[in-house]
Image 1 (cartoon, rainbow, N blue to C red):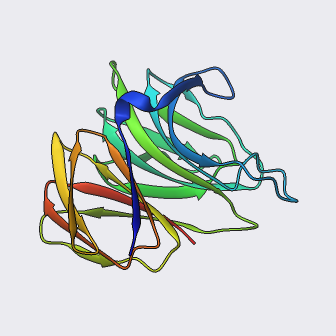
Image 2 (cartoon, rainbow, N blue to C red):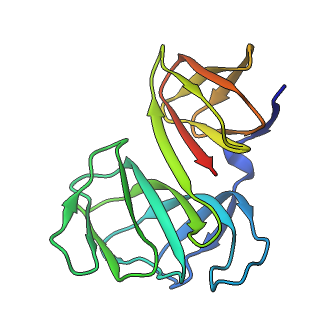
Length: 187
């Protein structure tokens, strides 16, 4: 049976980006040390985008970003042509290469799953009503992307408020009963 821990968005810890160019709201982290230069095993966070600028470069880290809000948001990764980000779609990229964002005036927000590429692998899915997922990883997170979501984990229902999360340890089955849900898994 899964161990499920509710993580309300009001409890996410706000902290400045490593480069000081923005604010991150940390949802969960495993900062156990390893032999690489990565400062954590994995980290799940939500970042406010206040305008154009660089992302922090983090050695030995890979990441998947999902745009929650923002218009005409484009990422330039390692000098490649800018990639337009669609709302609620993911983009994976190395966290230790120069990456910058441009966007329409205003603010935006994204979800970031980052991990030490020498020790683990991260995966992200965006699920809608009726979608199911077999979770084989030891740890996963579910976050409501809309105003709320109802999910079922191993037969038990859980209701999430907007951008609230569940940490799911040792689950086997996951289903979305209502809403749109971001699921991050660490293997």
